[in-house]
Image (cartoon, rainbow, N blue to C red):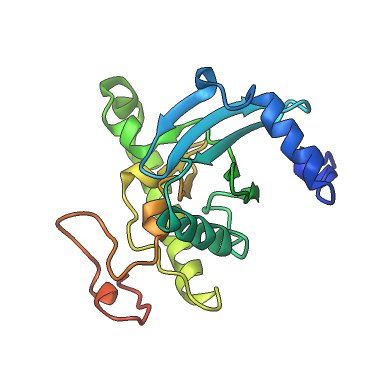
Length: 202
């Protein structure tokens, strides 16, 4: 079995950091594929040929962004499911903090549905497969994780698809795991969000 770059270098954090900085050319804008409220996302290829997504947090944003960063790393380092995005690793430093994820070739569900051509190719069998994957991930988070995980803002923007249209719940938009008194998509919130208890309706 072929090891990924991160499995091969799991005990050498400095080596991994140097590789990420070199691969992104010190986070050059030419590798940037998106900018969010908490950071910028870069697509890059490592020396092994492995393609990853790197989310670098905005600098000098205060305590709130670091709290969100810590929440995300805490959740994703203990969540292991085929329909939840894989976090390969992260760097937490006063001057430079980032997270490294597996890269999803299909992009977000929002991107697919907003494009006439890709939406037409997104036939019902593929849509049903996406729904099944999301349901399995939610079931895992609510009933198999201890403590249970409530995502609180699953929407088309943070559902990523691979090249086989398999859905992966993403937290590339860190707001969804920013543990403040309320989180969710404007206009709707699951009833369970009104309490601290995770329910199947969250």
